[in-house]
Image (cartoon, rainbow, N blue to C red; front, side, top):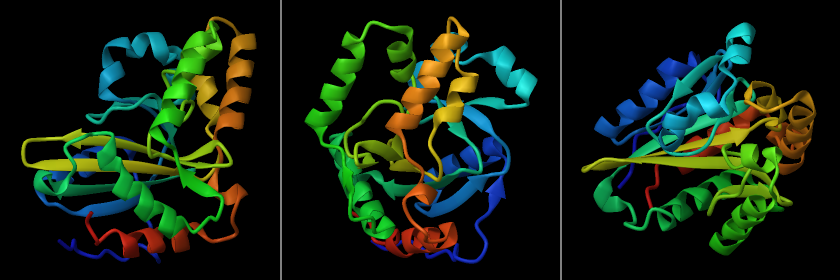
Length: 242
């Protein structure tokens, strides 16, 4: 199956986060793909954490800073969505998607690795991700608990890391007839997310900020390629379904 091409090399759209997430989900009706960046900052939380949102996100701090708080239909932890993330989404007929949810991300990671063209970048293996989660759970501290509620603060299978630091996060929505894959390529590290999460004190916030800085990496820190060129390479690769 081949999907329509879209020219993103010249003008990558900057969209309001809520509208952009809605546009992603609308792809479930069209089996298409798109790339975009956020026109304004927002903290986004996946469906599995909706019921805990008020215990994860500092809603007062977000409100004071003018940062929108959004929920999405895909899974995943809290993330800071802003102009420093290249976002993408692709929808496929469910018949083209592996039944095993974890394994179904492999093809997308391989496509993105090829487009990013970073020799040290690699997919996270399943055992590696499980080990990282286990280590965070064993680390009995508010920082570890916060990291476990974030998208980029903990490893997940088939996401992309560069020298152990997460560069690309993945999420998925499944419906009866189609599956939507969403991805975010960091252009800078996710340390600013610490400003918007609920923590017991400012010392914890500072520690969390440091951990997020150490656990994530932005594309602009590791390559001189323009973001538009990376977006174009991803767009060129995406028409080929798994």
